[in-house]
Length: 210
Image 1 (cartoon, helix red, strand yellow):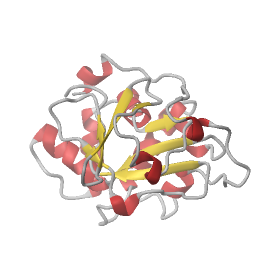
Image 2: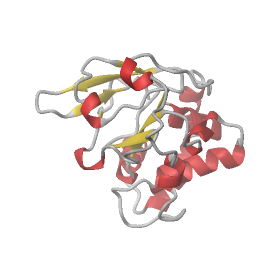
Image 3: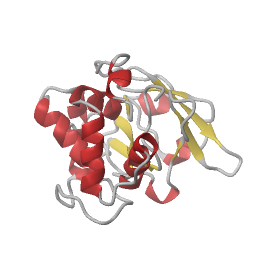
Image 4: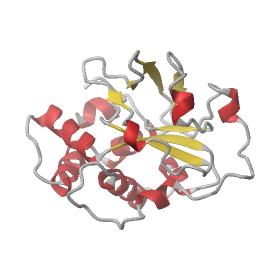
């Protein structure tokens, strides 16, 4: 997995998207500047037993920035920079590890150790950047009306939005054989009222065919 992803990916500079003109406009003065990094760290940098939160994403961001302080992933700590992030839950990372290794980790810490063992820091960085749409603040209502839209990510690769008749919002990534991520209805508009916004998703987005 490590070499197959890394061979086709490098961390690129942040590229703004022009998908939705109303979301790519300059940030409103009424929006706050609390960063998504601050939101992720709000309950402390530790693992717990809640598979529905984002401890593994938090640890992944911390790991990348510790190894590469100038990484573009640092944009998540710049609350005045407009972006949308799709955040895999801890359960999403466990699904990734299970699908790749055939074994289901028993804990969040074990899940992260497996992820760190499968990919190097550069690849982890590229995966995180594939979950960030820079220059656009896309709330859940806008996403629900964006069927077929292509989102240009900070990894330089596109995601496609697929809105089902049921209203479910799917994100189609580069791995055609894997299950697609679904935006979790109870975890939308995270950091609402701020320039950076996020939505929880059910699976880790794959920037390459694994």
